[in-house]
Image (cartoon, rainbow, N blue to C red; front, side, top):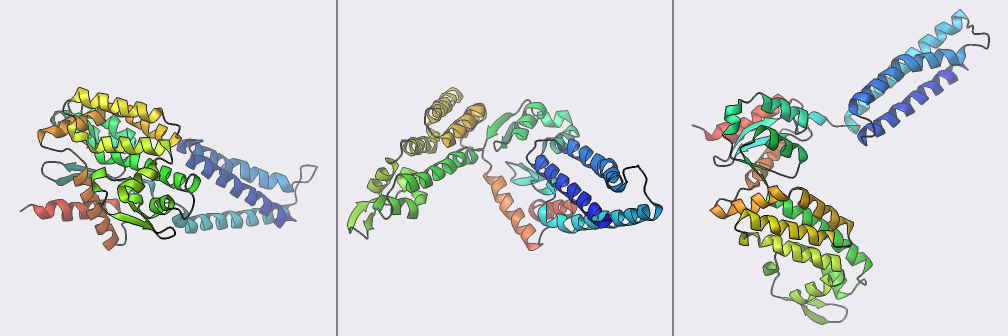
Length: 353
């Protein structure tokens, strides 16, 4: 009887902790609130529930029963803690090192430093320690469309121009186009037709420049009919108006070198955002909202590439690939300081005499 009572109380505790974990991951409650509630349940509520469950109706409990309850509760509580420690590595990752922030010098093409995490508290702590005079010398800040980086550029590099890397701008749209292609293929194209097979086998042609579409023919095995790739691509796009519109906008983005001034680039981005918002696809609406939100930084990227220096994050992406190789060779790093020193030694200090 006692064992059954303690077991159900411990099971209730476990369920509450799982619910709290889910709420924390989905940001229903903040991390600090989760810790406070968990501590209150574990240290106050649960011991009171265990003892109150076995007290008789008169509010008394025998001494030997109290001792048994205490021993069983401590044993099961310690067992749950041990299970949590053992399984923690399988169900969670170190959030502090999940996404590091890499600072690099565009002109010298080398890493300046590696920050433990790209979340705002870590970035604020790091940049607060840098002399404001040194921060004022920065002319350009290049990043992806992450809100924390915009906050850093706005508060710590007020004299710099914030540029969003065009690779991430285009990738945002190509990801939506690829999802639309799959939906069009499954909902509007008849299986085993030339359009269906073409959309399934040559999906990369929907994400590249029109000039890169090969000048060759596609033969449909079932009907033995030959189609030129341009013709079949056009037929496939016409199956879905939203896909057709997104593809044309992507081609406009590929021709961004035609935009010379900041004002022209800003009007160009605003027109694209409006065209995306006029579609019926929620995927394209989300892309259009992102373009509108980052329109000034994207316009800076378009306009500042006309001085024969293309400010992009391509160097950072190359560095990321090198860092992945370093991490893979070491089978991962548990110590961030050791990881940072290894990266700086191989990529930056190795090049210096």
